[in-house]
Length: 156
Image 1 (cartoon, rainbow, N blue to C red):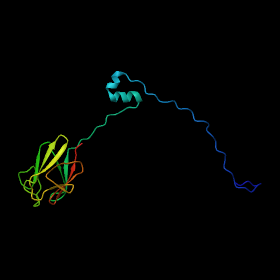
Image 2: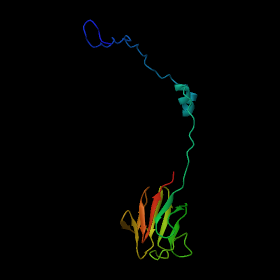
Image 3: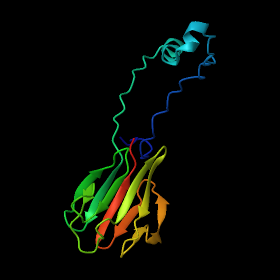
């Protein structure tokens, strides 16, 4: 409301001050007993007084995701044993495409993942657009075999 004597606009009310900030004591971590140090979960819970709950991890196997070609889309789970991929009836992974050789490539399992090996196919094996005879696959790699396109997903 305007001041009627001075014909001045109203002024803002003075702000209240809260005073100086109180000092916050420095947080010190207590020395943990030896039996708690052996169990990290108990040590975290005891030292911080915050309950720590174990997390369940969901594992998934390594797989190839077929995104183009006959039978796409599909997921092909990769086992620990070697697998042959091609268009023949007696292979481990059959994809009925005339662009694939009967025994087109082998997928080998090893300690750190999977490797592809071209079995002298007519149209070759391309890993990330580079023709390879043998190569180690990494998560997200793109394999192309003729008109078939596969994505590699590492297991977790």
